[in-house]
Length: 197
Image (cartoon, rainbow, N blue to C red; front, side, top):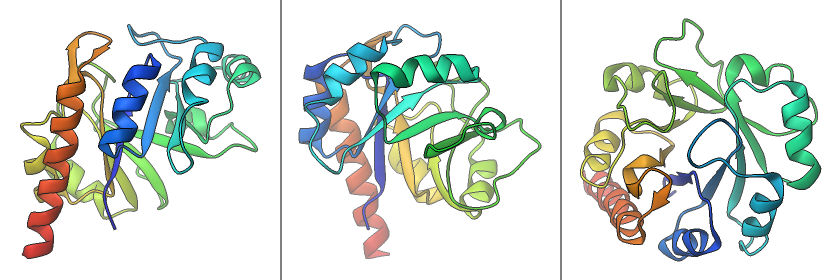
């Protein structure tokens, strides 16, 4: 089974199309404070053109119930991503809880995302800790991944999936089609190496 590739911080249809054509299977639409922040109507407009099988993820950090409710009035995601403490209060929605390398709590299984203290700034995570976390469930690895280092991270950590945002940008909030394609190619090359081992 292919690794799940998620591109976070998509802000326009052109980028979404590049992602789909490259083989990305999850797109993150950011509702937290960020240069990539969208309104619900923008996220809905962009995601309306996505084909079946591509996950639409509403990305928060530690949102209030009101913030989530406001976003869901205009956007219907497949998953809500937020720090694991916040996710505990969500009802009736599928979630992707985020665990950070400084957390003292670990997931009890299922699918989750693991990254550093701050999202979207390109800071890498402790790969030794990520290796441990990857044994606990379907871990999506995030934090500082780029086309030039994602292969090494996959080989070491063996995650369920990988998540990238700033690592495929030409400037904050501006995704580069070339870097998106290079990232996906690097992930698939790492998968091929794993198959041959």
